[in-house]
Structures are given as C-alpha cells and as structure tokens.
Length: 94
Image 1 (cartoon, rainbow, N blue to C red):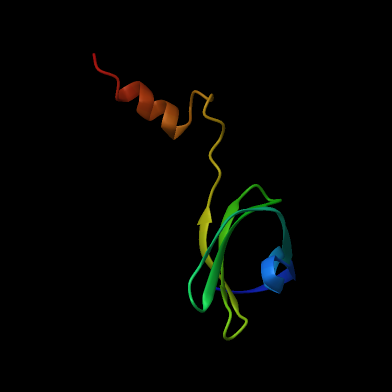
Image 2: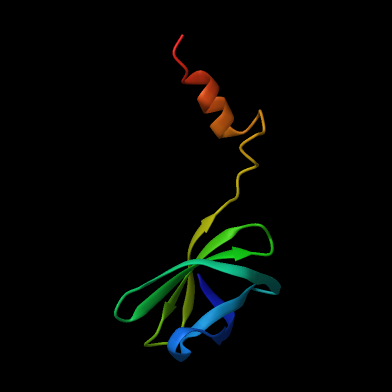
C-alpha cells in the first residue's frame, strides 16, 4: 500500500517519518520504536497517535513509502478477558 509520509531529518540527513496519510486520514508518529536497514531500503516501526504500531518501508532509490505491517495494540495484560490472560488460565497444569 503506497502512502504519503511527512518526514523530518534523521540520522545522517536521511528522512524519518513524522506522520502518515492513509487517504484523507492523517496519523501522527509519537515515536520511532525501532528501525533497520538494507542497502536500498529502510524500515521504521512507529508508535502512532491512533494507538497502533505500524512498520513503514522507505525505498531510498524511488523515495516511495509503503505500509509493511500493522500491529494492533492489545489491551493491558492485567485485563481478565485478553487473549493472553485466557491462554495463561487454560495452559496451567492441573
């Protein structure tokens, strides 16, 4: 999925995402959680102001940005009804 990404200047002058546009919807980047590199591409895992984690891929040769992954946030681990809490209850030895 091709995206419009607002960028700021990062390490060594390279572009880093500040906000992502999904059509007419703008999602701000609160923090870059992780980043990794390949010879012609860069990936950024970002914590967005809509509460989601996105992995954005930047092709340095073309300047295009893509959505590589979306990781939905789970409710806090202390909640009784979360999948993690339910799995923990069912996987305990009897």
